[in-house]
Image 1: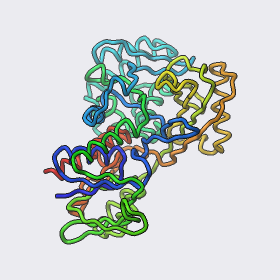
Image 2 (image 1 turned 45 degrees about the vertical axis):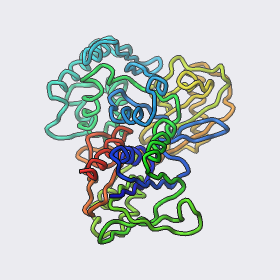
Image 3 (image 1 turned 120 degrees about the vertical axis):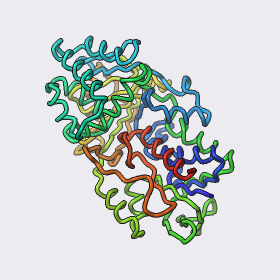
Length: 434
């Protein structure tokens, strides 16, 4: 048995680590120069950035386990914060160090920026979800669920919509209530530490994918970067992969046969590779039907003394949704990141104009009068799939024997998160091992 893996994002690397651990030879092909996919490190003006400012939750057990397995140190790699939702000057919720779910109920009852009646409504909502075991007889939008449980517009705007967009990257009018409940169940209903927010102190390539590559190579596997796969060709006894140019020798195509292939490329790339295979027509149709949502990250390099009141906080009814102070998180003093998730009017602005809006918001909200030395807007226009109710996502096991799909968009209980990607990769590895 020998396995080929297309794509070196978190899903592909998770599958490769799991197979390498079992002693199964793996060859991984990544078209980009660096590993990580949509969660990767990038350099700009001699400054280490990420292509998007992500965070992990304490309930991301498999992602955190794999990071440790390949040599990471969770205490050193992350700034761990207890659950908090701070919309500067408008709303504040902070979970005390109490057992779950008591910590959330106390946080809701003590939240600032909403009335006592609204706090009681939010607490009753969470208790109702627990009684339902976070399961809905039929899926619906998050907006519909909130109306059913008496969560008024102010409460939705300040509490539930920010949580929904942070978790699903999908507006509440479009988002699946059941998938949101899956996240709330795992993050808020078991251990208090499950709701902790983990902000990486290192870039997302260094955090897991690069360590994973070293782990795989130490166990006899191979990881090639700058080496994309051009075609998947089914054969009687295996599957051939054709690369655009030989790895590591440039200048000619290379074909290699595998007993199994895991395609963990982005959905659009996967659909392009699978389209010539008539047996996979239904899978391609499912991928093509996925709607996507963007994530914009605006990095701003200020003088080193500029900082925010907290490492992470949000803004209410602004272009900037979440702000990260990289000085407090990773020692990159003066570097701020503004994240704008899901669809919105920000997509209509030129990047220069969007950056100037963010700069103006920082000046108005925090009195930051300095002009940034530079800014960098990173727009992932197809960052995640739109997590709609009753969405039929492609199965990991395809109709072509030996070919599997991994990625946060494939079938699963989670939205497009790092944990969702990792779980899909581990499931593919388990199917092959079995």
